[in-house]
Image (tube, rainbow, N blue to C red; front, side, top):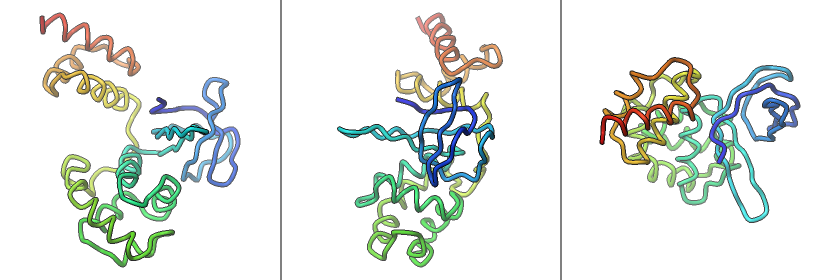
Length: 195
């Protein structure tokens, strides 16, 4: 599964772009104001169906996480979620849900009163833990270094390691490792000290 891509914008077709990543063109849906030739990096949601694989790109982790949360809402599909996030920032959206602001949500494309009520009901509790508990903080794009650490930490957590164990291993890691290199390094460290 593709989780992140970094490259240059090769072509733009409405809400789709072709991102050139080392000579390979990835077609993805993205809400972006980038121009052809611009360097870009995206968090990627990979949607797999019987007859297609579709990539959705997000310029920061907050948008990516909100998109995935929106997909859990009954009746909200990927295209609807993209349309919603094209018209409202992550901070504004989370504030609207926290404040139970039905009017703000019904102004979004494809969101009627019933859909807005479902979003408020189904996401209210989920968004309490969004961004470490402060749902409107720090929506800046993640740096490459912290992105590699975030992705590696998620993989190591899935393997059963605690946040403290992971943080200790990362402190010993050389700088500028890729996600894969960081995971391998951390596993060596954790296995060496963990028995």
